Amino acid sequence: MSSSDSKHYLPAGSTASGPFATVVTPESAGWGYSGLRVLELAPGATQEVATGDSETLVLPLNGGCTVTVDGHTFEVTGRDDVFSRVTDFVYLPRDATATITSSGGGRFALPASRCERRLPARFGPAEDVPVELRGAGQSSRQVNNFCTPQTFECDKLIACEVLTPSANWSSYPPHKHDEVTETERELEEIYYFEVADGPVGPGVGYQRVYGTEQRPIDVFAEVRSGDVVLIPHGWHGPSMAAPGYDLYYLNVMAGPGDERAWLICDDPAHGWVRRTWVEQDVDPRLPLYTAEGKEK
Image (cartoon, rainbow, N blue to C red):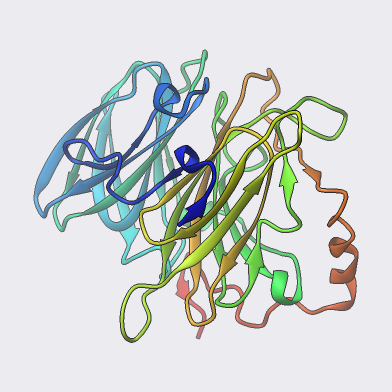
């Protein structure tokens, strides 16, 4: 990893605590809202999860589980891994204690945001998750919009999954969302990465974050499965999938605004790239999968 601002790059395991392989809280990140835990459960294991002042999701990375909260029990089918299918998930309200049990074991992302409203616990079916193909050419990527403002109700939390086929760039053109303007809203963001294995061993990808003279940040991280990059402000992108290795990342966003909206501003030096997509086809490898699994 090469970075002059390494406090924003968290290698896999560096924030582990108890059953959680990853723990990012607003306090540890040095901001106000966004958080993420990754829970690892052995076959047959059970874990209580307290949400505190944060609305929280239970999103399987691999495996399935049963979630009990507020007198409701939700059966979550899950998936083999993040490269196999769109998954179902569960919404946990703030001020709740949930019990998560996995008969076969698995890993479960818990994206979270501090919030004010206490919304009801709910199940999110995989079949209801919109799959968006964004960009074109080597900027083609798949976005699973499972918890965006248009698709699932939350108070503050915004989350989605991005799949970038090998050798493609995503989170591109570089963009930011760190102030309130006509076209931008302030959102803290967590990138959690998984990289597909190759025939010999684990894969690798890359993430760039850079700032302005007024608000500097400088990250160029080589990322592997389980790594996290924190983006408090600044331009972020590209997320680069190395040739031979598909790249996955979970985006977790939240901010102080009353409006729950994902509004961004492209880096003016690179925004022109969007106009070139009109003349290019979407990568034929996409979608990598849907709720039904991988394309035949």
